[in-house]
Length: 84
Length: 218
Image 1 (spheres, chains in turn orange, purple):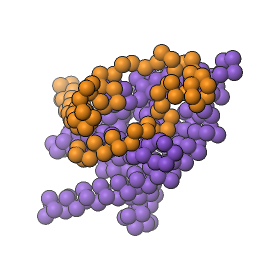
Image 2: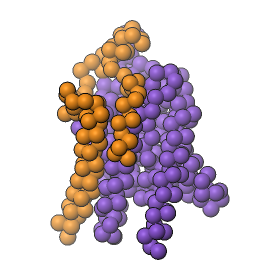
Image 3: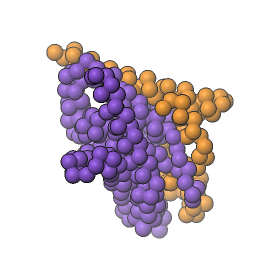
Image 4: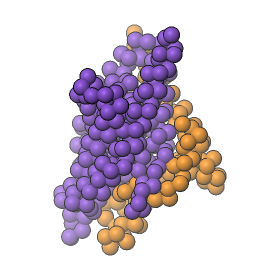
């Protein structure tokens, strides 16, 4: 699965609705007020890492995701054990 | 689709969180039971969550200039049960939002309910409905397909009601497209394409695990 993730880069188009807010200006003629300052600056926006090649950025993001998944369930398992 | 912050009103996000939090609490309780029941469970659950994460990174372009992705809800719901699948998908959504900005932070309740809860339980109940009545292939396909389509309806509803409820000076404050647009665009694309992909993934992956199980127990 890990090796397949760079195929996600084939599409430059975002999922329907998941547009940059400027796109709304083009689509409806204005940027909805509530969208303007929303959201955080995530550490690895759009799974891309700064100047790094997109494929590497994707693979690294994928690996981070795997680590996070394992970390989550390990943590969950151990929290219960401590309470016993 | 992952709903970003700003696309839905804070009130929508809060209502979703109010519904999601007790669901998370119960789901975590059920997940811990599974984790404690079996030493291998933690590895299996983690791998399943990782699988979901990875498959969500594979965006598939479709005509019309957009893209979408499978979630793995069918696979997870069938192999882990709906509550654990819900927690696993919600955990993945959380990391996607916080680390990668994919989906909002306040919106996590809405995303978790739409993709995690509706998706897992939808898939699971289709599976339960069909599994002694139809062939394995059809059962698995419909579970994945049905879960995805139901999820897409949930997302289309959450987004589509925004302009109905939250307008100011004739302009939408949040997501500006109503149900007349979101249902055909989101549910339509999931019914035609992404649901099919999810269905096929469900068939392939669940069968793969059944084969492995046979190999391992032999």
